[in-house]
Length: 260
Length: 106
Image (cartoon, rainbow over the protein chains, first blue to last red):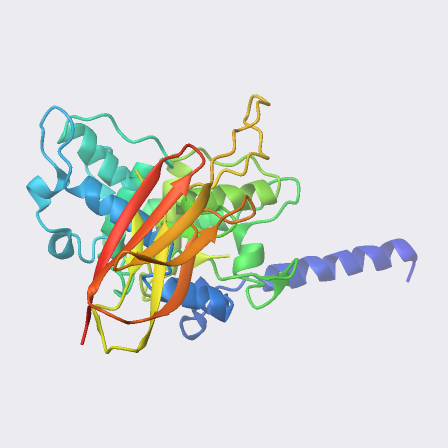
């Protein structure tokens, strides 16, 4: 065989191998990012007195009962005790929003409520307040399995999210699936590659030294593959969040998680 | 808004060794970073932590810029009497934040 044909054949073989590798994670192999962490970081998350995310949950609890906006009503004014009214909510978000005919994530829902019901200024994306309040609400679902809503209207958006998950992007020309579906049992630069299940958001990342949202994490990954990251709350971001939550169905909510 | 989480056993037997934990939300800005406009961000860290038990100092720590945000401090002491455990954090701006917890010793 001449060298050119040989090279083409090799290239074809590599392409076929990488295409065949794009397998979804089977139900029995689904694992939270928690299982990939060191025992020390796991202990930090497990113990509420050493989990730094609990400081934000505490802050969120305060905001929950604080009157805000023109209405002068606190979250607690309508929703009462979050322990009852918000239990299980984070497990079923993003949900379909009839006003915009699009899915909306938990932080988006909270900010919407703040603007339309409380008549207050929305919290800035990724601000300490919105993260704290979202963490407080999501913390009420801790231990509950992720249960995406069975809503046919969400299907096209989830499909779009899946498409984005498997779309190669950036200068490195990699998709989310290149790492998180195909190579989750391996390491990248010494760190375990996880399955990318958003079980613990908003979570405290030691690298960030603060709480951060799933969107911040996705943006970090996108910068990593040298792609232009989606803006906060961009429709693509919500679609991706929606797909990731349906992909993680059955895993338990850990909010506030701790990650390295 | 500063939030602190302290953990002291509600009750203990006299002479028992108890673990005390304290965590506070603080950015611990090192002073080595520069902002987006190239201007250095001034240092602002918690530089001193004091714990008193029944009015007596039982633990003091000096903190430095290498300590991460939201410092977490855990230590042990001997339960001597029923009283108040008081935690005080002081930062570079001179601001102090105090948290207290009660312990019953039998």
